[in-house]
Image 1 (tube, rainbow, N blue to C red):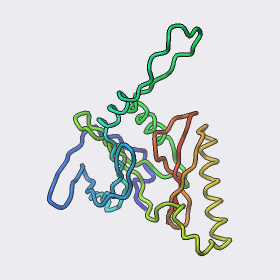
Image 2: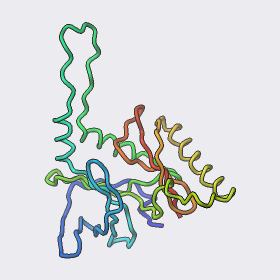
Image 3: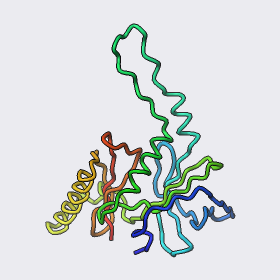
Image 4: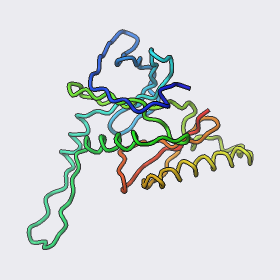
Length: 206
């Protein structure tokens, strides 16, 4: 296990980028194949040349986030609506920073670790480095052969332990799921909001 998983999350505001014909490197992270994709970015497998471990590096496009914010803002409330509660419009980059603030506080065997954040103000992308799990979505477990009782009990127990921890931390959650071998981990997949819609992925870690 990487020693980074037991340390506080690092926050780097300087990103050195190197490009070659075969790979891109961000600081000590050599980017490899794409392992996931979302509305505002992708997830790359990344090799850390310092500790020789693999990580999942989430790449968020700041420009795309801000364009979406500009295009889909709600219109101002009509003046004739008395006592109408003002709508709170949140900049998506502020929501990302809120997600990071939440993830930095989390430390539990069944919660995936945010290892480092690379946020250079001169870079159009923000990078979030997570603990890497290998097996993919728990929803992709083959259904032609049911899990044996011991394995199913183990996965269910670990899921509940992670959820219990989130509730103890006063986070609420909507669940979505992913896999590895042995222990279930909960992992953020979209913008996280305290006391709002905390969306999770469930992963299994060998």
